[in-house]
Amino acid sequence: MSFVEASEKEEKMRENYLRVGICTIAREKMGIGHAKNMSLRIKQSLKIPKVENIVFPKSISTSLLSREAAQYFLEKSVDMLLIINATYVPAQLVVNLVQHLKVPLVIWTVMEEIKTGFPEVGSLVGLTQNAGVIAKMRKDFELIFGPPESKVTLQKISSIVKTISTQKKLSWARIGQIGKGCPGMLDTEFHLLELQNRVGPEVVYIPIDEFFNEWDKFLESKIDENKITKALVQKIPRYGITNKEIVRNSLKIYLVLYEFVKRESLDALSFRCWPELKSHGIGAPCLALSLLNDEGYPAACEGDLTAAISMLTLY
Image: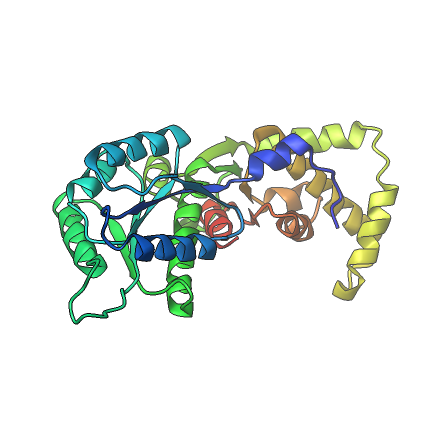
């Protein structure tokens, strides 16, 4: 149940698709049938929700084509590059791609069928050579060696994609810090610049006084909360909260916090709940934070911003 309607623009801003560049490297007149079959099977296996596959339409068999592919992926702003290493190829083809694309890299090959006692396409040889070259270039990469129909293989590529997607999400995230950490809770402290440099999110600090200013404005507004309050009461009887005043205050906290989420385009937030809310006679914000979490906005209590980031990462 959502108590506030999110705008279409806001929902689009929260969509964060991962753009995966996919290309196949293979020598002309050398295992083209194997290369096409392998490439097709891998592409079909990469139908992952919220992942957009950007496929270079040509098989890369020359140095010029590898440079063309690099330019193509740069223009498409891919977040990750998957090289399907279908056959043995000169290392320069991979060097051209890796040199120009500063994104996470995965090289995938499938074992070829040995019919004559000697490898005909050399896919594993190519994988070994290209991995060694990339390592010498001091680039990070992941290797996948196995059929796309294998559960183990699919779990590995899925894990890689989720990790990179999470990194991208965190690098563009905005985390609201409404009030500093609660008194005496030393492990809620953090170094702002180090956090953004190492993890990625921007921290938007909102003084706790701004919360109370918004709270006062809300009390003076003409918002009819009866309908929402009724829906909220119906939702939570299993928790044993029947005091309507507590429910109303929780609803008001939720609406004020949601106003900050909307205004600042926040992906998550932390909220200093102690001791100010008690001294102002408002009550605990636990229910309000739970409602935000239910709607996909991780919200941490006690001003614990690093906890909010951990919650967003898990989400």
